[in-house]
Image (cartoon, rainbow, N blue to C red; front, side, top):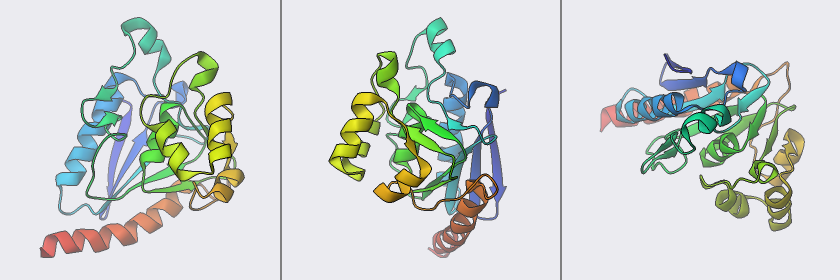
Length: 207
């Protein structure tokens, strides 16, 4: 059994990382399950868009499962050619939207940065926290961060591990829509994904 829930909502495939006790950190099994689910959604002409989110409102994803990494070594959640969670290096043909209802740090932040759109609750925190553990963000987060936010902000986050609150993320342009605990990110992301998904799925089925 993996820590991933896969649901179909019309033309949208919803992926929920369901490891709330581990702050939705990805173990190897869940990372591989995400890769397989995205591959299936990409191949399904009835799916036009995807959403990735985390269970609960504390964390979107805390990155790699460090307890598992301590037991078996790091890197088992990296999918050759497709990256962490099957997302960070993947070339996709369909939009992937991140719905952030809590912290998105380390590999979770890198997954978020690889998405096409980001919807985040107001209490969300985002950042590359690896430096605080003497680690390196190796799934593309540093490169994407440097390309998508102002240079000074990117350098501060990379060198200090400082987390960016949701409101600040909106000002930098990294986040597309804000919300609150009372208005979680996933339903709003679902509304956008639904419109895009139906249009794209219809285009594929007519092709």
